[in-house]
Length: 101
Image 1 (cartoon, helix red, strand yellow):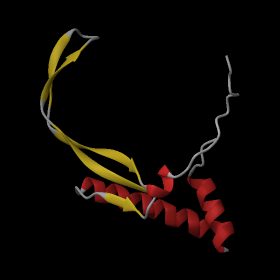
Image 2 (cartoon, rainbow, N blue to C red; image 1 turned 30 degrees about the vertical axis):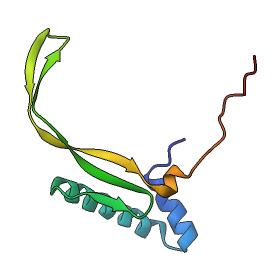
Image 3 (tube, rainbow, N blue to C red; image 1 turned 90 degrees about the vertical axis):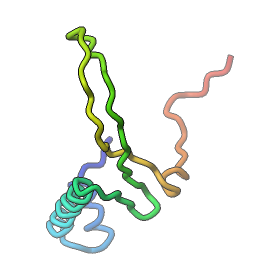
Image 4 (tube, rainbow, N blue to C red; image 1 turned 120 degrees about the vertical axis):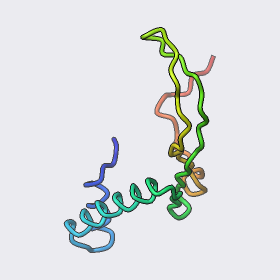
């Protein structure tokens, strides 16, 4: 199950004793600030959870297999997600049973 924005707002409201509407509005503004920062060329770091880096992708001639032709892929910067220590420390058991041979 994916935890969406509304579920995150509900959990924040419950944990911090806030109104759920305020938590939802805060998260909407939070997303907007993240997007504006990335569009401005800034990198984002969220505590010890994650970091979004802007990775430089160089110009290259790429091949379109459907159209069977080459095209120019222009140089650009793309967002790249990097988990930090608190996320990397998480280890959950597998949902699949162990199989011994």
